[in-house]
Length: 157
Image (tube, rainbow, N blue to C red; front, side, top):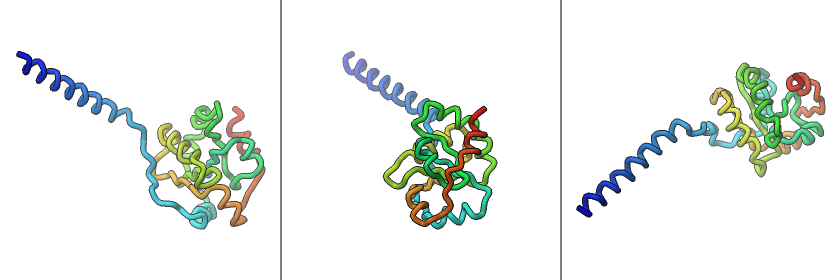
C-alpha cells in the first residue's frame, strides 16, 4: 500500500509539472530575434535608405542633449513608457526597420525596450538592436540632433 501511495505522489507531481510547463509556454515572452552584433556603419546605411525609425531608450534628458537625427525617445525607465509604446507601435510597424539603441554595449536598455516593443506587437522581422549605440554613432560624426518637435508632437496628445 505504501508503494502505491508513493507511486501516485510521483505521478501527481509529474502531472502538475507537465501542466505548469504547458501553460507557461503560452505566456512566454517573445525572444529577441537578433543574435549577431550589427556595426555602426551598417546602421548608418539603413539610416540613409530611409523608411526606418530609430528609437532611443535612454532618458529624456540624455535624448534632449543629443540623439540620432529623426529618432524618437521611449525612455525605458519612464513611468510613461507603456503609454509611449502604445502611441508609437502603429507608426513603428509602418516602417521597414525599427532600430532601438541606447548609449552602447554596456547599456542594456535597448534590449529591454526591444522586448517590450515585441510584446506590444512590433513585428519581429522589423527589429534591429543597435548595441554599439549612440556613443559609436557620435564617434563616427553621423547626423545628430537636439530637435524635440517630432517627439513632442507624437507624445503630447
